[in-house]
Image (cartoon, rainbow, N blue to C red; front, side, top):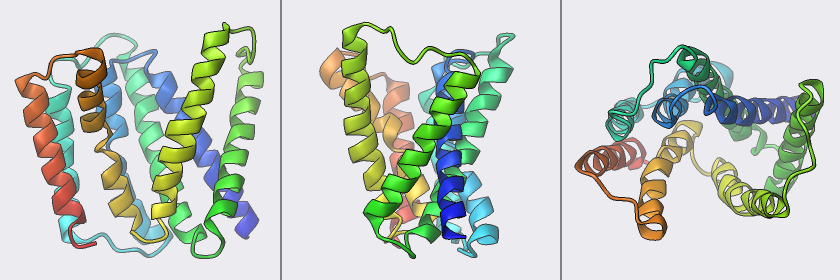
Length: 223
């Protein structure tokens, strides 16, 4: 049973990456980010039924505040083009699959060491993604050398360090709390874009980011 759940968690992680990244080819970044950041809502809805982990009132309130902040961050950039519905559906699938991954991870890490969990879920997710590329005839090679360097850096820093930190935090915090902390990524990303890419911080960005941070605090302060 443990092995089956590990493979299932890896499948949900693979679905998250595949659907969310693919959504960016069909809808706007703002729409994709807003929908994928509904992860706390899905986690709060599903966790009580799958792992009997109740969602507290402050987590619901904080999640809704975060949705408002995320919406303001992307205001003016939402797309309603012909292909947007497909992209939005893929982003939503990415949110639900990530919620399932976090929920299963919360339960699995109570039964096994953290490193073993990471190896099993990352490894199975990679195999599912490779299989998907082969089935859909997506090329796995032939890219310029700099592309491989940045792919390696993506695997090393956001995945091995960032995602592993989120996953290991499930040993100490509820799935709902971890999922809410995830939606802070747009705020951090916006700050880094200002710091390294000289992108302007607009009033909308500052207001939306501030509201989002308030939502995170409201949802997580009890833990």
